[in-house]
Image 1: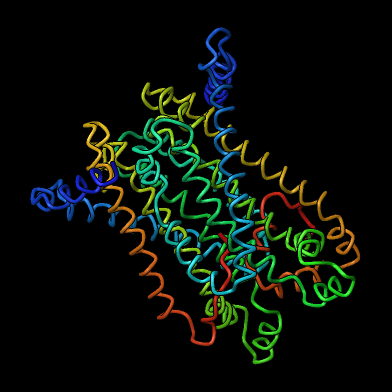
Image 2: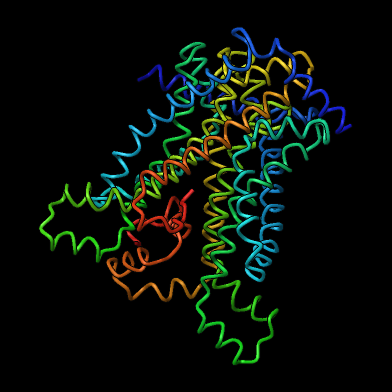
Length: 261
Length: 228
């Protein structure tokens, strides 16, 4: 037990001692963490920025969706390592080598959720908006998007966890944020402390991001909480079982408080 | 530039030396399929029973989902390198890392598949006199099968893609072309290896499309929504 404790203390000591090196801005744990956040968040943001207009187009022109979904699923089958290497001749060792493939993966995960979310807006809600004189754009922004938001955020949560974990793989092409800590400082030097610190920080970053998305969902859809309160657990479970998409069920994973469903 | 890259790739695939011996494409492909299958079967043996149990009883669902989500956040290369440092080079670290990658999607989808069986169906099964185990095996497993298969497919594609990193710890598989190509600055070799992994991943999704036809009852074949 005490050896485990000593070992953990050693790992922690290494992390503290190597957190950052004043005067050498590219060395240490902190620069790698910031690089990881930069690569992951820009990939997620670009993926989201692509998924929403594409999803809208798929809902507006229905025939677009099946071929686009197939194409996107084939893309998902392409391993990230292979994509990073395929990007190398075009983007070299710039951030884009990591961001382009990761943004595509985010798009792959998000597109079905955006389409399902927009499609499951109840018809009477849409008709009510039309009856109130909402034009297509205003209807989209103030009625359809808010109703679809929980499913879109559920997809975003899955995509962000996957992306944050996958950024590390980019270390094999010389990028990769905390992955570089794991590979260069840890594995190549046969030293376990940087690997542990890297893994822990990647998982922590994923959990913090997930919590932020849950928080965003609560702030953006306050009516969901209001509706839920009077219902019993059983009624909720029944409602969840009747929900048409599996995407919604993802939302009930890590961030949801226990005993709420 | 693109044309040169394609020419190099075609030349790489056309080289007869590429198709024979222990470093040839058939041998590397065989290794890759072997690691992937081994990891997938082990993961299914772990994840499917647990998912069926938690889905059927409704106990531990939150814990399962949280653990699966946590495992999903684990960076695979970190896990792999850590086990290599602890246990040495070989197949064990590779398979362990791949299992850690494949268990969450199978577990979550199995759990959700069983849990989301309509209560009306469950009531009907109970009304027909089925007991708990019969309800599980004759109702819940078949109804959950589309989602279980989607979970397995997601896991399989990820495993096939990630088995590439086996080469970084001195084991074979298609990743060898990527690692050795990187060491020799041979772009055609890297791209050839990557293309083979992509083809294998696409073939994997096709295999699961076939499995779906065989294993899913005809009444249930309407598109099931995945929980990735």
